Each structure stands twice: as structure tokens, then as C-alpha cells.
Length: 192
Image (cartoon, rainbow, N blue to C red):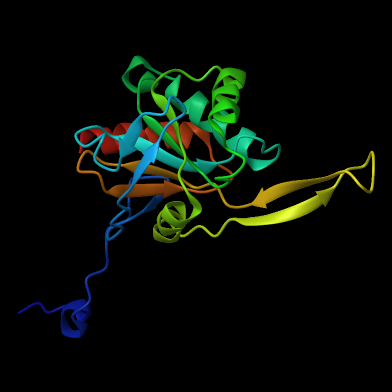
């Protein structure tokens, strides 16, 4: 009788994933109902039946957000299969991400209608941030032109979640986000 040591311990070691991002086996996502840049309601159920992406940005970001946006855009533009994948950007700056600034952000980046930039009040966003393990922090930055001219920045991470057809986050990519790896994982999740 052949009896392995792993059976004795009751351990089952998972097979190595064929995905580039971090596989999420128990992430429940988050319930939400937010408004996009056109003032239309988008919920966590809006894209059930479609693989889609969720990320967290703010319109006036000049550091991390442009890199994440560029990586997602490059990934989606690789093929017709991914070009129209829904992308939900959830604000990490509810006060600064006005309808006008979100529209300007989408125009600046040439983002198509499959990209929706969502915002809400800080309380409802706070629940989503917590469920997606974000903790955005506002910080003051002094402008070089004047000590009196103060701006703010939001310090945050910008993970990109691939959400499966059932509406559950399946994989997360963190910075630096490789557009090729994000694309490959998007294709793999779409086939499952």
C-alpha cells in the first residue's frame, strides 16, 4: 500500500497556477451602487456574465494612476477579444473626482465607453476600499512655485482585479502591472 506523507498530514498542496497575477480563491468582492461619469448607476451586479476589470484611481493623479491606466489600456488593445472588456474605475478621491474631472480624465486618455469611472460618498466608498484592501490617504503637497500654494495628493495602491463572469474577483495584479501578463490572465479567466 502506497501512502504519502501529505496524506498522513492531511495537507493538499495546490498546483502551481497558470496565471501571472495573484489568484483569489475566497475574495467576495463588494456590494456597491455608484454613479459613473455620466451620472448613470453602476452596481456590482451590472457586469454579471462578463469578465471585467476593477481598479482604483483618481482623476488628478500624476504618479501611479497614469501608469495603471496605460497598462490596462495596452492590455485591452492587444486583441478584438479584449478590446471591449468593461473596466470599472472606482474613485479614491470622492471630493476631487467630480463628474467634470472624471470626464476630462477619460477624454485625456481616450478611454472608450467600456471604461466607467465610478464615484460616491466617502462612507460607501470606504466599505468598497476596505473590501478590496485599500486605505487611501490624503496628503498635502507643497507646490514648488509657492509655499502658500498647497495641493493635495491621495496616496494609494492601484491594484487591478480581474472579475470573473460570476462577479467574483478571481485574480489581482499589483504594481508594476505588466500589460502582457494582465492580457494573458484576462484571456485565461474568460475561458474558465
